[in-house]
Amino acid sequence: MVIDHNNLEEFADARNYDMEDPSDTGVAFYSALAQEASGAVLEIACGTGRVAIPIAQLGFPVTGLDIVPGMLAQARSKSAGLPTRWVEGDGRSFDLGEQFRLIFLTGNAFQAFLTNADQAALLQRVHGHLHDQGLFAFETRNPLFPNSKTREGLFLNLKTRNEEAAGPSFINVDGHEVRVSNTQIYDHVAQILHLTTYKRWQEGDKQQTRITRIALRYTFPQELAALLDYNGFTLLRQYGDWNQEPLSATSPSIIVVCRKRV
Image (cartoon, rainbow, N blue to C red; front, side):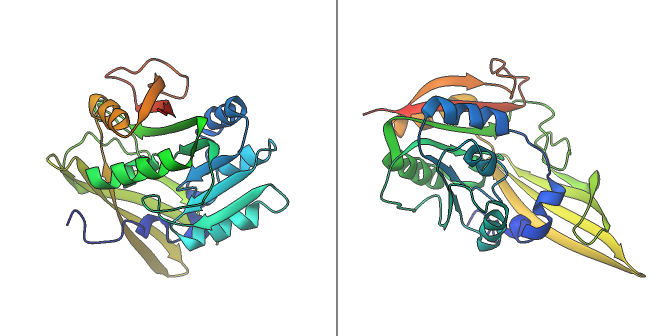
């Protein structure tokens, strides 16, 4: 067994998820792809709709798929009147019975598919749901990058670190300042980083602490190219960051845009 938890603890508090990550990272990139693909859109692991909702605001019909009901409820509450549909499902096994012009994952959600079998199952589901002329895109952190950043702003350097490292604090929905820190263990064989996050805040005279665990798979560039090819995708474009700079060893991300082979 790769992990001893469901890998969803970080997403259990949907009310505070947007408070912790209010960024618009990826919105412009995936919105441009939606306009290029010009049709129905599917986001896998859509969370609270941070990227899906701005695409729907452009007028494209958007389906958001996520395995966490609370995240979908938050997305529904933010998207009234928009052409959106929110579906509970697993990226490895969903079947919507239709095809889409654009399918994407963002927020580095690809890294939640921890094993070769998980990655292949995801890609086969995408292949079956992607229009013959459609686009498939996602990003993942580049394991070659010496200072890969998490959402909390910690420099990872893929190695084990038992001491807590502080990240940026945030204000939660109840108005309390939440201090964030992490420890990490890196499994070099499985290529999985195990992060434990500590969130601490004061309520009156009592300190509250919430501890969550998440595991993230790191896939190397050539490994990723082979994985896409083996699962029936042709790589159209590849970037190293949101400015669409070429991928290099110093790029923070691997961003890919693909079509399926038919």
